[in-house]
Amino acid sequence: MTKSVFTENYNLFLKLLLLARKESGLTQKEVADKLHKNQSYVSKYENGERRLDVIEFADIAKAIGVDPLKIINDLLKGWK
Image 1 (cartoon, rainbow, N blue to C red):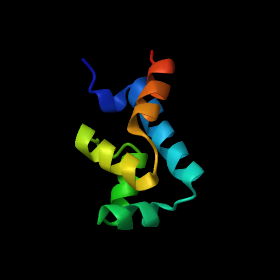
Image 2 (tube, rainbow, N blue to C red):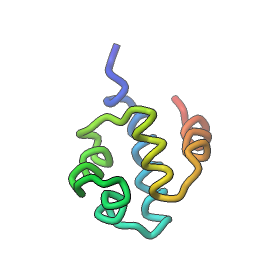
Image 3 (cartoon, rainbow, N blue to C red):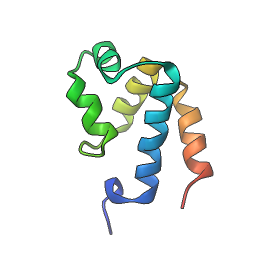
Image 4 (cartoon, helix red, strand yellow):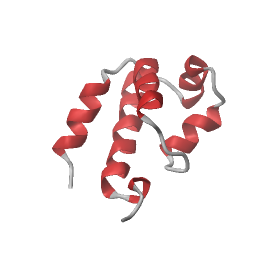
């Protein structure tokens, strides 16, 4: 079984997070500051270099001001 980080579904998840950040008008640096992380943390998960767990995902959603359930629902609409 392929790790989920290399699947189309995980790539869609990352695209949805990136879109949500951009729609919120925040830069990677601004999100990182809200999370008390370096900008490279945001870059790495957005590029798929770093896998997110559910707690990190919830923290990121809160930082960008989006309901995590919206992202999950959007993900499930495109699920393959």
